Image (cartoon, rainbow, N blue to C red):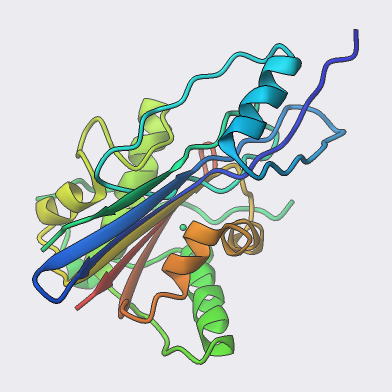
Length: 245
């Protein structure tokens, strides 16, 4: 019997922004994975019910994680990975995204003796920042500045996902992206996170993020002023951290 395969793009977008009477943050969950097959098919669904009906029709088992107060947008689509059901968007919440890959520098956890001044982004991470600012310029937005502490955190997050084999905004090691920012001494008025897995080049991952509403919203958020990018070649995990100071 012919086995139905489909690709999806996984991404989580998390936004925190102060409202008139306080700070409010919104996060949206979307996941994407692609099958281990040369032939790939893409399906678009207009509702979760439509997706569930399609999966049941093709005898594909799945489970959904209920949305919490905090929203996040998940990885962009996997390349040569088994498919996974997309995550639903969650509401906003209060709070204070074959070339040879570049060499990875050893990731240091929070509290490391490595100084922020000596921390540098690798070639792929720098290219993602360039592509982000190109997209912002097209939309009349100012360029985001690289924040070394935020970039260090982003690579630690990517490395954590690769090490512990998960793909989610919430880390079993550091908690939510906002919890993790606190652990790294990062303060903000607005904050957001994009993650992706499977894309092998900066252009590929940016295309996936820009074609996802939640990720695109983070990349083009006028309230963000700084960015951090982390890429880990093992599994091709990508993390974008955004803050507005």
